[in-house]
Amino acid sequence: MIVAALGDSITAGSPLWDPDAGVRARIGEALDERSQWPYWAARRHPGLQFRNCGVHGERTDEIAARLEACAVGAGALVIQGGINDIAQRRPVEAAAASLRGMVRRGRELGLRVAVADVLPWNAGGPERVQPILELNRLVAALALEEEVSLLRFHDTLLDPGRPGCMRAEWVSDGDHPSVEGYGRLGELAFVPPR
Image 1 (cartoon, rainbow, N blue to C red):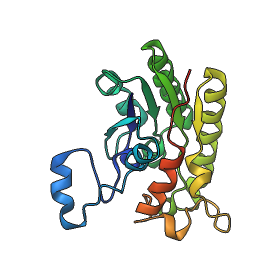
Image 2: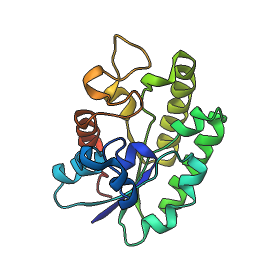
Image 3: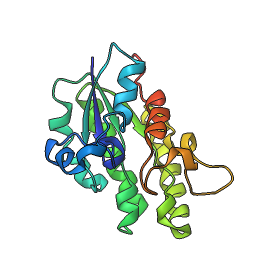
């Protein structure tokens, strides 16, 4: 089964991977395909083929515009996004509404759907902690209401000693997970059978 992985740079695999060949060429010698959660999810679930549809820097409304193309031929959809909405100081309620719309559209297309919450953001500063927590609360509520799986990316990489931050070994550049961090996320990223 094909699992369409739709999201921003966290799905794409920044900073060491990207599904776009042009971006990979700019990464150069540091390129590492293990720097993406879909890589690790495919290793954990060899019967699934993950299609990486992550695009660096996109907000949830921009991600939503690519859903149909990403989902062609897929049996499942994993939706991830929201940090760029927060980075651009957009209302978290609008991001949650966009995520809900993607969940509903995925289900209308007959896909099994999962939604991921937003990671801690080490480089975001203390003023971004509350918006992330609020968006994650809204994402958890929509997953429950829409009866889809919730992938708790935030708590998986959270450093309990540093609120709002990923643990040092699980963060790469302050914004994105390390290869080890992506490995931990890949352990979560599956869609249960109907």
